[in-house]
Image 1 (cartoon, rainbow, N blue to C red):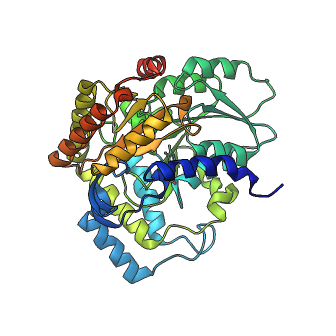
Image 2: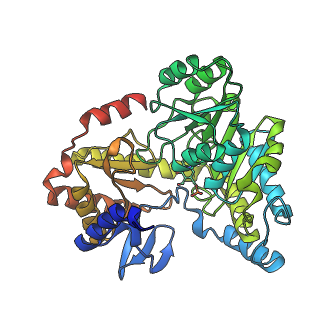
Length: 413
Ligand SMILES: Cc1ncc(COP(=O)(O)O)c(C=O)c1O
């Protein structure tokens, strides 16, 4: 019996992937050429598996702000937000985010992961409270529940009725109830009926947390996410987000109209016990936030690109998991085909994400593409050409074992 026995199953899969071609978990960006191009394996590649939704990674004002912060405040804060790691930039960004979202309070964390972890575990009292989560929630929401130590109940994905039933069945002795959903789900690109969830949660006296990691800056008339697009901003109790996608940096936040959010700073271990984002990171995220507020045309371009790709893939007969969205996932019948197709695309100068069971909702195998406003027409042409060649090269690429699953996801989007 060895400590490492538990690695055996994953190691076997990992080795199988490495033997059959490029291993998706070891891709190296040898040289980054811009927001949508890099050299991978010596080849210039179109990047369509990043979350650079608004193409902010090389914005001159964000880079200049980061350089200035480096010069003035140094490379790191060397402490947590709770101790010496709160600089004026952290406070200013909290204010800007709260104002942008129309909320009164905001707490910045070191990553999007710790923001969810810290919000859930910090809010919940395991003795009296329960957390109810959408079955397809991201790992950080599951981990936040585990860290909270509270009873965690899953409801069916994007199904307010399923939540309703579970809330109705709760022991009346339960005190606090926290419901967690996401805006846009990152694996399939499907979106939540947020307003329906607001109504169900509040009817049962529960609080609603919406993780808009993938939809912040991307959905809604002014980019506030799926909650804005669904007219549900006022009903949300806690809004979580990340700096690592539309804001093209690293960090995360929780915003709320509940003044008690401030107490999270004293009760959240993922806030208290990790170093705060560096001054340069905060400066670039702040500049990116200003950019996305000032340039709604970035969102228009993103959506034009997403619609064009979605239409082209539909015409190719591929099985797309959801209606047009900045994440476009093509479902494949099994992981062998997903792996071969992913390698084929990479060989053809296109980088997307491969996702395979057990880590995927419904144990699906898929090729997942994240669109950027920075994708040029030429990038989109190259993506369409590569997917066309892939669909022609692999007979099974147009066939899915999951027609039922596609129909069920689409009917809820
Ligand atoms: C839905 C969701 N929430 C939170 C996170 C964590 O964000 P970060 O990578 O910025 O820590 C992710 C990461 O991809 C995510 O997909």
